Length: 603
Image (cartoon, rainbow, N blue to C red; front, side):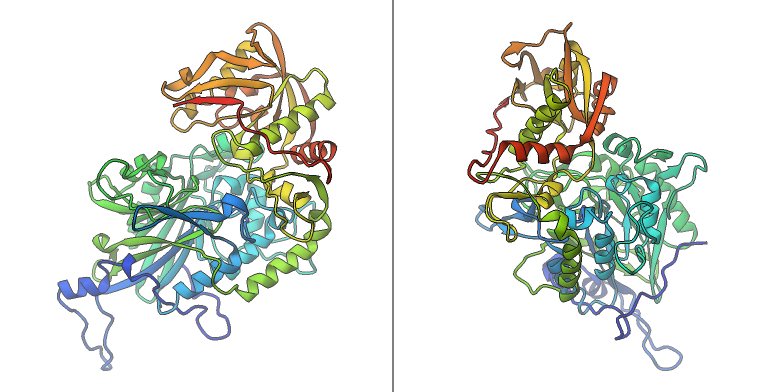
């Protein structure tokens, strides 16, 4: 049976939403324009009532990579770059579900046909207010946002398929239990996982597709995550699962939907690209040098069947509203709304009642900033306050002091360096023979800000802030490697699966080397420049390396890190950071941010 939607939840006033189109500039050739260009087909029905016109605009609001950011993200994570008419840029504070709710609700006004969809990573790597409670607060917030459907992302598997199933279906956590006197109800929107199969049954672990229906308008949604999810999630999180090719899966279920008479199709893909500009409103379809978009989504979009009318994407945390040619050479809209709830995309899908398909030439999309200048949504303020009250005894505890912001920006970031220093310090507590530490950049989720977020005072690092930086509960692992293996690890940053999108490990302060970006592949790591405590690496010597359990399992495209010997497993990485900050900083002697000069970059 097709997965067809039923009438949505109501709010006591009939339909749950009323709608308004907020950006006329986003819809250049919509139903009105088509109606003017083509014969009018409305006529009288049997009871003298006019039948619907041929074309119906459907509003698709979308966002991606929320990562449990219910409160406004701090630092650069809570800002977007806006391109100005004169070519300059400015930054705008953005994000927070209190504001996202207001923006979405305003956008829906006046639009009777409106859908809200997401591109995955709604949860996982979440700040304390959500992560401490296994992301139940975020699911509750998404329910209140009237999210209709989302694909799974890789972070939906951080705690494994069973926990994802609980987020979908509800129930108390198997070990933590219930956090309130009310049983967790789960998501009242479907998670789609078309390309995630149970190894034993060879069937999708959740619904592969879902159909939105209002009167005679039907639009199908197919949801997939990146095929390489096992490479960016701990082995335990994807145990017993198979991840299939994104294109093959979407094309397969597009045919299934077409056989059911659903010809209007949107793909929700947790994989993305990188636009030529970091400005959210950059025209990536403009001609000339620097225009366009690169990355995995380009090949995916070029090969997904033309039966799919639009692609909502994510994963790269980038912002774009582009067109990429489909296999027939016709342009097709591909969008992404950055991350952390800082943007939402407003796409107009013009539905042709005669064909049941989307008029592709009329599809237009634009990204909007979730500004913090609008009124806060009271229901979201109440939700945040309620969960913060539960988290406060844990989150407000001071664990250290910093003298300035510790940003998480750049190829080598001060925050990444600080974590590597902490893991070397902690590793030497476990084993004094520990030589160095390496931290994966994707595991550093935020920086630390000097300005107080609450009543703790400027410069104080709270447990909640530390949790936001390192929310994965990875353990600190010590392993032995030969010098040759250590050199190979550094080369794997820019070769193998990391060739096109390098993953530069954050090194402890005693490891230095040069990264020559004028070269290609593994040659970008200048072998002769690698120094540990000022000395060259001896290929035949043994080195004790401190990493987290994700890297120690070969994650993020570092297979050599999965070959270490003489393993010793310590506490979780947040504990290591907490102990380091507590031991090495005080109110009168705060820790200064690392300079981030361990990697010399040649361009």
